[in-house]
Length: 190
Length: 92
Image (cartoon, rainbow over the protein chains, first blue to last red):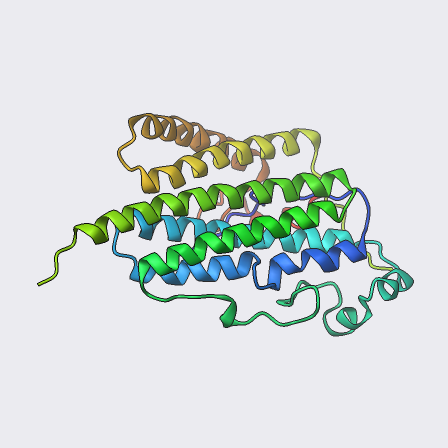
């Protein structure tokens, strides 16, 4: 079951509007290596995990990623607040605005829609956990790129925090993988 | 020009208390993820119990003062405050 708490996991603040940056952060919302891909991966892979440890891990991290989606969406909105028509057009945001105004939508920065192909659920726990670890690395790398793309210290702060979470998730999945590999090695087949 | 309506500035006190809830909840979450793969670690269990307890009390205090954070709490007022407090993506 899912419940919602009316607060962000970590504060999201911006110093100034930045339409170009808003476009860039959309990658972490509807992009291939973004928070939605992560969340959808984990929340569905958990159903075929053999160990309670990994059922728990995928459930809990999957839910945390939904909270990160919320943070990215909030960042997107705040970066657009106060933008003029000229600023939007100059940043190449006119098309998006025509279709979605300032509502976050499931696209990457190039307007490519999110798709299930960004996720994997092999159903085999070792394959899935390796996939998840790769996903966390890709998300980490994307956050590093986003941090470089802005000078706003408040935006950098939120992005750095999100980046650190990816690193922690990677470590947790590594532990889950080790547990599953030990479990698999001990199973006997007749 | 894009403008969102409403003044969604929290008071300094509310902001500080909210941040305390966020920090404490984060500590609990991080411990929980660790416990997911280390379910018998006694230190982690101890810490989780301590922080979770603190979190429960702090959250109660926060909600008593500033309104509910979920729809599942006991709404003691005469209005459904849940919808009318600032929404997380609007808070300045």
